[in-house]
Image (cartoon, rainbow, N blue to C red; front, side, top):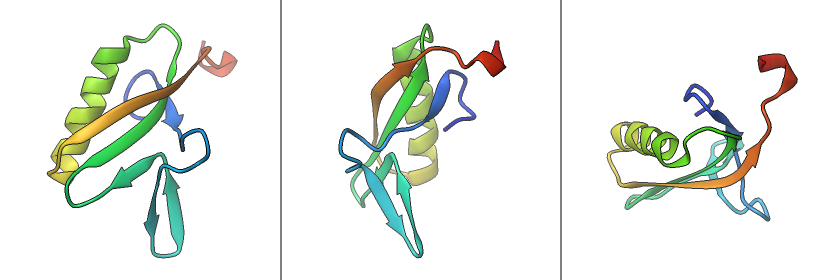
Length: 83
C-alpha cells in the first residue's frame, strides 16, 4: 500500500487485531476472508482521505476479487526526509 501516494503504511489497529496470518509470518493491517478484505492504513496529513481510500479499495478489489473496506487509522505529519 505504500506505493499509493499519501499512504505511510499499514496499521494493525488499536490492539494489533487487524492482521492476516500466512505461513511463517503475520501481515499487520490487512485482513482477508473469502467474503471481504479489510485494509487499515496511516496517511500523510493533507492527503485527500476519500480519494486515497478509493484508490486503495480499487487496487485491493482487483487483487483479491472480493469487496474491500478501507479504514484510515491514523494521520501523521510528512516525514522530514520526504519534504
